[in-house]
Length: 480
Image 1 (cartoon, rainbow, N blue to C red):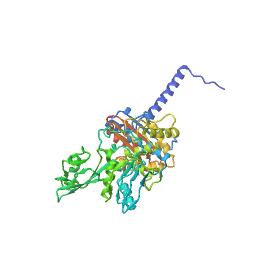
Image 2: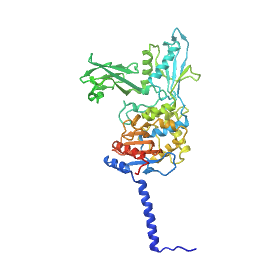
Image 3: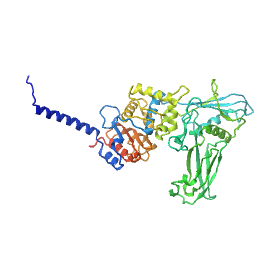
Image 4: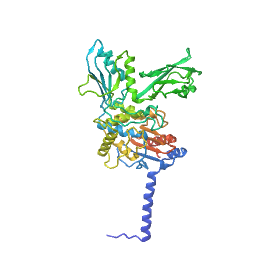
């Protein structure tokens, strides 16, 4: 056997070539696609504020793109992917929430000689129509007057007191509503404005009709040509609404005649009294009578008289992910913390244990409330990529994917300028945060996991860069 000997010079040259080759490969692996880089430059966004990851969903090859993928960052509402993926595995897509009702006395000539007890069990979608059906069911039992009380049990969740203005100083924004085991209609008031040019006023309808609250039922019209939306761009400011008194809603301005019908939802100013006001107001609006009051209390241990059921989890997560419903996500998150009483800490513990069992025992993201409406969440693009690969291999993959917004078609991505219907994604945005994560359907037929997180004061300006990233991921059958 002949021994190959290298001179010192040849050895050094070979070593330098090997190092150069490794450096070049590393540089290429981290290089951002030109369209993305150009869009980031236009947005004046430094690359060290961005984390990007694109890899095959089935995990069969190295990432197509990996840039700062191991850096923990605030993902905003993209954190809902953790909550909904864990829920699909832990609860199952057919899981439903139940709201049991007890009637604890005899009904004599249409009068219940006792109380009605309603127990909340965390239903994220106990909307006005469902509460109406619940009360209608009582009437179907022959109850038209209640001689006792309507008792509301919210004890399944044990929650700390919160200030709705704490997060961003916007306590009347519905996204700031706090979770509740008995979450009636998201604790919101829906106001519908309908202009009538003949009377010169717009009528105002309120749902639900909160008991004990005085509502202004019309506002004067201001000039505006029908069909022109210019006068409607800031119709809320023109109304000069006054929500400072929780027992009175007033408007000191006017409504533009050309606006047509508009719907405005707000979180009620006194959320602690919302359930009692909403249920009593709705019961009385249906012709029901009540001798006692609507008050908090505890449900009995025995079987309920009847119960109403929520939509399935598979349906609920479509609202959570497509429309980024924060309070529904928090309801689901707390459900994972059961049995009662569920707390934010017990929910965090349940999700952490799930993550350690299914993804990584040591590399666990920092999860606050499950919705992403937090400054304390931290997760890396790599961790989100692992989560999405796990979900892709799961039997419930179709349920999760269909819950995500379809680019350019629906949800929070309806106005995206990326290749239409090219991806199913969850978006996230807070002040100084923009993010997206999900699945791209590439031109080659492959499916990719894509994650992008931006933490920077100018984060809102990077939407074109994220659209460019989606389009780049789609074009995997072209020279790039």
